[in-house]
Image (cartoon, rainbow, N blue to C red):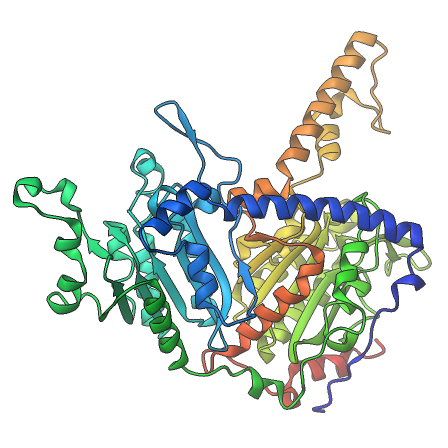
Length: 578
């Protein structure tokens, strides 16, 4: 019973794609990838070289330089929330300002062999101040640490709220003050928090590090509720913010910090020592002596599997084959709900469940000999993934949801089959699961199907999008048809014979479709935090290596059953041959 029957999945690319298809798909994804790389570089530059030079002139590192110095040599860095505020401009006395990455860097990386969450104020963007959506981005990173019990490291260099925009970041349930509640919840859960204070930490920036288990301050850092500029008579008293709240005060008098260090390098070294003293990773134990291995078919090929036309299908099993170790996979219930794939593979030696939409025509169990379109949730598929999701939760297996979904089945038969009830069952399952769940929007993420397959409203630990993902209630063309339905015949053709009216309807439908296409852009979603990060398909394997390892790193905070007693074995026996 302990045997997990992993079998080969997928095949060499030249067996299922013609050379022209590989070239066409590759050129399409290469263009999308180049655009993604350029935008990442723009965000990483902050406000530009001039502002980086100002930071260096003070003898300090930029936020990204601190992250690079903190991480293990050769360790990957996975940013979260890179595109928050992308495309937004803020008017300050007629001057339009941008806040790249909302002025804060949040990443997953390895320090002393452990996955950690790093939150670093971007001191090249308005001295690391908090803009609209900065608090929410910080809180999302804190949630990631809380969900997986990962150490959270704060690299604090923050001048508080960007005051011209305070009304959009100070109040509200998830405004700036909620950061400190998240600090408290992390502490209450026993999640290690370590803060390095590197510069001006005013108001909220001063509060941010205090609840951490360890607080280090450099010699030019200070933490104050209000700086010298706001204290009456400060000039005549020759007060400075450093004198009011520098390391001399907070290390030796107030005890709001633990230790003073000379500079950025020394502070980063101290944080690394703290991480080294923490509990070691449980990943080696959970691997059970199985070594990590790359997929048999290169993950880089994922950038050539997706057609340029989102209506053209591909084989999702070939995608999975390029994500799991050795391209080995245990598919369960393959004979039922064939519009869905459910199964288990290893990622970097650790077990992980996969739930994915099948594209293209699939057999229709209700009408023998007929087929129906894939990428849609039907009754059997919903029941299948609900049961698989519950079993993974029972067994403590993390789940990766690979979404490419157009929504639920609709029509008289669908309602008679009770799809509302089956869908509610799936939603209940995913709302109450305790096992870590990660959602990847491969392409379409439409309607209630996006919700049911652990979309962001159902609080997966993290949601990733590709540059070709499309989030919407319905596609632009479909919405245009619905908007002008009374003007169309049963074949959705314009019913009017009046040339002027036909032209107006055509123009109106085209405008609706264009607007929805713009709304579905993944950068628009990421800008308003409707997805956590945009990644190339070829980057999914490294991301999953990080996320699945992080799921098993901490000990004792969640149920993890050994494979001998998995519920999945019972499920396989009871459904085998049905």
